[in-house]
Length: 115
Image 1 (cartoon, rainbow, N blue to C red):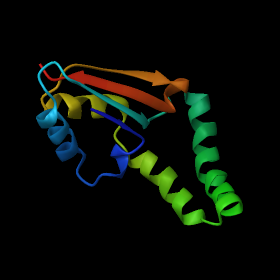
Image 2: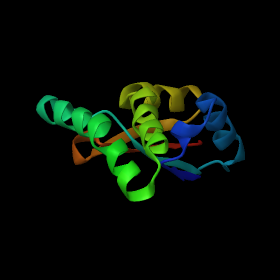
Image 3: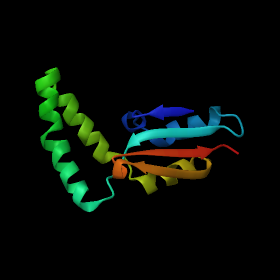
Image 4: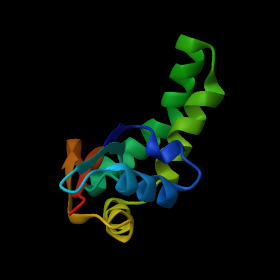
């Protein structure tokens, strides 16, 4: 079961995780690629400013749609941090749950197994 850059748009993430666990066969793997919290403090502040001050403006200039890009950065900030999301995956019944930060945590890959 894989999902990329979409689970943060779900209203009830816990239900999505429970459903992923339900449909997987024993031994199946859940994998999720999603935006995350930047873990390097200096980069985090630069990324935060870029996200809120640049991305929506670029969305307006390139796509004529500032609101969607504003939603994008707001939804990223509201999504659970890496450890919290890993705990949610465990609470859904998955085992051997882990995550790997990519690009200093701009995005992360989470995984877990249904045993």
